[in-house]
Structure formats: C-alpha cells, structure tokens
Amino acid sequence: MAVSSRGTGTAAAWLGHPVTLAAIAVLLVNDHLLKRLWPGMVTGKLSDVAGMLVAPPMLAFAATLAVRRTVARAGGGASRSAAVECGEADRRAALTAIALTGGVFALVKTTPIGARVAADAWALFTPSAGVVADPTDLLVLPALGLAWIVRRHAVRPSSRPSRSARRARLLVALPAAVFAVTATAAAPIPPSAVHVEAHDAVIVVYLGYGPDGLATSDQGRSWHRWTSPPSEKSSRTTACVPGEPRRCYRVAPPLLKVEQSDDGGRTWATAWEISPGRQHYLYRSRYESSPLRSDTAASTAVAVLPAPRGHLVAVANGRDGVALRDVSGRWHRLGFRGYDDLSEQSAAPLSNAGERIEAETGTAYLTALTVLLAALAFAGCLQRSPLGFAAAGFCTWVGLYMAVKGPPGIYGLPFTVLGALLVMGGCVGLAVIAAYSRMRGLSSIVAAPLTFAAIYLPFRGWSAGQPEDYGTAVLLAVVLCCPAVALGAHLAIRARGGYRRIARPPRSLTR
Image 1 (cartoon, rainbow, N blue to C red):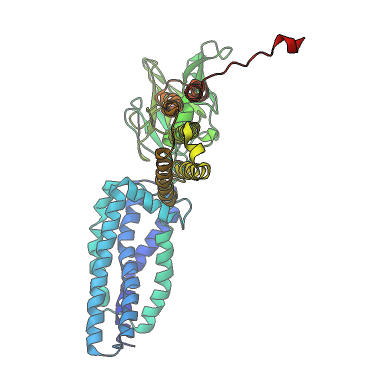
Image 2 (cartoon, rainbow, N blue to C red):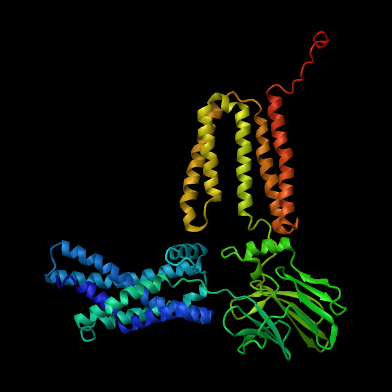
C-alpha cells in the first residue's frame, strides 16, 4: 500500500507545509482575538487571505482519501500504473480544490443568498456565525495562486519531510485546520456608541469595544480614529453649555430622546427624539438578525462643545449611532458605516412601506384563507363531502402556515417546500369538491380578499410611518376586519334563504 498512499502523502505534505501551518495560526488568532479587539477591514481581509491558503489543502486531502480507497479496491496498490494514476488524481484534486474554494467564496461574497446559506451552514458549528456579502473581499482571490505555489513546493522530493515528520505535522494541522475553518465565522462585535466627550474643538465618540473611538472636528462631516482612552469613568446623562449654565441637555434612557432646559434644569422640553413607534420599527429594520434589548439602542450619554457661533451637542445612542446638533440648532442622526465612519446616509430607515412586516403579512394570509374556507363551506362544499372538505381545508391551512411562519434561512427551506406541496394538494382537493357541489352564495368569498386587505393595509401604513404607533395599526386591523367578515356572512345568509322573521305566537296561546 506504499504507492497508494502517495496521494494522501502529497496532500498531507501540502496541509503540513509551514506556510499552511502559519495560515492556520493566523486564522485562529485573528478570528478569536484580533477581530474582537480591532474589528474592521484589516482583520476581515486577513481572515479571508488565510482561508484561501487553508481551505484548498483541506479539500484536496479529503479528495485524495477517496482516491486512495478507490485505487486500493482496484488491486493496484503497488503497480507503476497505480502510482501514475494516484499522482495525476492528486494534481486534479488540488486544482479542483482551488477552483471550488474560489467559486464558493465568490458566490458567498457577491450574492445575499450565498451569504445567508454560508451563515446558516457555519451556524451548525458556531451559533454566533455571521457572513456578510462584500464584493470587495474578492480582492483576496489571488491568494489562491499562492496556495498553488505552496502545493508545488510541498510535493517536491527535495523539500518533502520524512514520513514521521509528515505524520506529526498532519496530526497537528488537520484538527487545527478543521477547527479554524468551522469556527471562523464568529460574528464581530457590532459598533455601538456608548460614551461621548468634548475635547477642545473635537467631539469624541467611544465605541463598544476597545479603548479607541471616533472623533470629528467639523460638526460630523468627517470622522477619524481617536486613540486616547476616555477621560471620564462614567458617561454623563446631563451636560450644560460652558458659559451658559441655564442651557442644559439631558438624555432619557431607555428612549432615543434628548431634552433641553433653558432655566438651569427646572423645566425640560423635548429637543430631539425617535418616537416609540418608530423605535419599534427601527429594531426590526436595523437589528433583525440580532435583536436589541432596549438598553442597547437608547440615548445614554451627552456632551456639549462650545463653538464660535453657538454650541454642538453629541448624544451616544448605542447601536443606532449618534445624534448630533449643529450650531444652527439642527439635529442630525448619524449611523455607523463600518467601524471607522459615521454618516447620515448610514442611519437606519425609520419607515419603509411594506418592509419588515412579514409576520403581519402571514397573519393576513392565514386569516383570509380561514374566511375563504368558511365561505366555501356555507356555499355547499361541506355538505357535498364533509370529510374530504375538512381534509383539503386542513392541508391548505397547515401548508400555508408552514410556508409563511416557518423559520428563516436555510432551516426554513424544508418547511417552505412541504408547505407549498400541502397548499397545492389542498387547493386541488377544494377545486374538485367545488366542481361537484351545488354552490349557492359563492359571492361570499369576496370577504376573503377584503379581510386580507383589512389586516395588511394598516401594517403597511405603519411600516411607512402612518399610523405612527404599532398598537394603533393592530386596532385598525381588528376594526376593519369586522365589516369584511360581516359582509361575507351577510351574502352567505341571503343566498341560503335570507333572514326569516320569528313568527309571533297566536294571541290565544298567550292569554
């Protein structure tokens, strides 16, 4: 079996090469330490480069194991032709591993669905896995060329280590590489404005990781890295304008809100805020993948900086970024753009018609289907085939529930597919029963689309900002559903004989 082990020996030499071992070490240290201390473009690209050097030899090693078993079963373990076959198969496996690594990486980094599938796959090993589609990461693909050069150097007879050294390297490299690759998708700590300070003509925003922060000297138009640690041990929730002790500002956690006082703090009025209704939508639109507690998206600190023609006010709003008041009195909401910048364009939207209301839309579909099934039952389908109608209606309702209420991502795909099949089967059954039934009052099915509109439209309006409060949208949906269902019931009753007056008993019987 010495010749048949040549393929795995070559792949093991590639995996145990010093360059590959260094890449594994970089991947482990960078993902589990450096990313947490200095999250950003540098540490992100460093992981990608190391991954380009580690993934191909791992895939090639797995492929050559399969080739070795195939050749061994064929009985050519010690023949010259088997050696040639193993050598050529090893080369093809290496090329395929490099091509597969580049193709999958490009798919993940350029398409949202690729990033989602990769995140769901890595989540099986790392619950906090996070993968973001970023086309700029394709700049690291030339590292695959370096991986091929390392492989060619590793398979040279003059540079290959002894068999015992190769085995020792493999015992170290293989488990370390598996751990590094499967655990490399840990989601970085998201930026969060936790503290603000005013230094001379500079406003400094300290983030939720490390001692560094971001600073601006031009009223928030540009930001640069600030390396000095905070001078105050705790954040200020109230700050007054230097030289104007009667003008003060304070924050009101857990709200995203700033209050202003012009009489030294005796009375307060709202200077800037995000209403509770919009804050509710903000959690959905910005932090859908990692929901926030109320204390992580709140105005927690305030700082005031005097300026030649007025004063500036900076407010730390946690994950939402910063609220900044310029010298003219206008407030700006600045969101994080990566880890090194803040801008108004990066602020999460407070309204977007039809977005982030998937749960409410699913409820509208299920309620409308329930009304439709009731209308068909009263129209004659239930009388024609009680058992068949009940089975078809149950399959349709359960299938739709699985399709619209299943878990998100790749985990929800089986639920969606199975739900779609159940809906199609149930609809076919309902159509067959309806075709052989003597239908009366079919006009009552108009209540189904009206019910859907009654539920969906208030929540669509809430996502667009009108109504402002989520509870108002719920109340509107309930109120609007009542006339839609009542209309359907009215049409069904009229089709089956109308409203019959209760006959009064004869007078002789009442005496």
